[in-house]
Every structure is written in C-alpha cells, then in structure tokens.
Length: 305
Image: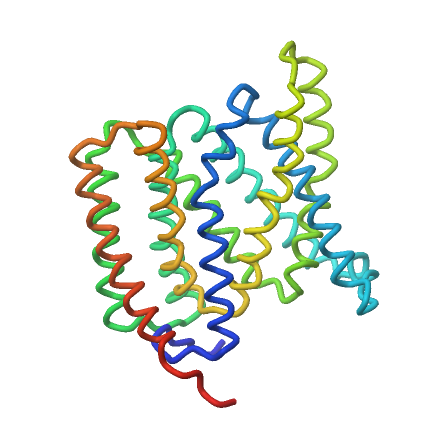
C-alpha cells in the first residue's frame, strides 16, 4: 500500500470527507445527553434495542440509496470473507456500544471521554505502522502532547481506567476493519446491522419478559430513536474513514471526547481531580495543534485533478 501523507493539501473530496468526519464526532460528543434519558433501563437492554433500531435505519438507508441504482441485490451477493469481516466489526462495535452506555448511566462519562482521547493515539499508531501513513512535524507535536496527557490520567487515576482502555481498543479495531472493507458505506452498515439483529431481538425479548420495570411511552420513543441517533453519525464516519488517512481521522476524534467531557463535568457534575485537569489540558493543547494544522490546510485551494 502506498504511503499517505497527512500534511498534503486535501482534494475537494477529502475536504468534504473532513466535514462529514467532524459532523460524526460532534454527534458522538453529545451522546451522553441521549443515553441519560434511558438511565432507568439496564445497559444491556438499551444495547439490544440500539442494535435492533440501528439495523432498521441502515436497511432503510441502503434500500433508498440502492433502489435507483439497482444494487439492492448486492446485499445478498457479498463473498463469505466480506461477511466474516463485517460480523467481526459488528461484534467489536456491540462491545463498544454496551460499555459506553454502562459508563454514561453509571456516572462515568468523564472516563468514557478519556477513551476517545486515548483512541486517536491508537489510530495514529495504526495509520503509521500498518497503513504506512506519514506524520508532519505539527502532528508529531500534537501527538506528543496528547500522549503525555493520557499517561498522566492513566498513572494518577484513582482506579485503573478499564472502561476507557476497552472503549479505545474496541473502536480502534472497528475503524481498522471498516478501513479494509472495500464496499460502499451504506452496504457495509446494512450488513453490520443484519449480523447483530437476531441476537439483539432475542436479548431484548428475554430481558423484557424477565423485567418488572414498566417502560414508559417516551422511553419507547427514545429506544426506537436510538436507531437514528446511532446510525447517522456512524454512516457519516464510514464515508469519512474511506476517504481520509487513518491517522487524520484519529486526530479529528478529539472533538467527541472534548464535548463528552464537557457534558460530564458541566451538565452532570462529575468530579475532576488535579490529575484530570492537567491531563485534559495537555490533550487539548495537542488537539489545538492538530486543528490549527487542519484549518491551515483546508484554507488552501484544492489541487486541480
């Protein structure tokens, strides 16, 4: 695979992909506000409904997008290897979804946000080591600040941040799989949804039968709405991930945890010690270096193709 440079002037296609990537991370940044609306329900039950209704969203999206092109049958003609990769992606993503819902509804939004500060470091490392992408000097500086900030949080945290590390590892793995799937994002998402549909239906049915908790009408609306809330940013992310260098996507991800952190501290009053303040300050300096570099490149005219 040819090396990609994260410091070259982006084409118009890449600029559009950057916009989609930023939008996806902004949506993820406000996720805690949504999942808190379902705090009465078990995280596992919310996860099952999230998988069910996101599958419905993906299938509707794929049907609409493929109807005019006559590609509807492509959903059922993919090779076994593609289905196996998709099944693996769906499984890894389900783990990520479930743990994040648990983190939000157990009052650990700040630790959940730490995961998505750690994840860019994993993504940049993968981009450089496996996809042979090159880092410019400013991105190396941004990465250094972020790395030191994360180390401060991990070393001085009152407990081992297993939630953060599991979330970071699972989402990085998911992104790598999506990067290697050479199929359209809407098709890939529809296949993911189908892979998890039957287990999710079974789990939701069993948990509802065994639960004594009565789900209100507005909670049912929020469970169903989880399909759109989940599917839309993931769809935007899929488009962006296939068009941008993986290390660039990784650094862009600082948007989501910054917003999640802000929600956890300022909206829900989660406590932040001195180590957390130092950690997040260093990470934000690194993110600032990255975004300055990104805005500088986007201001340049796109190369004529």
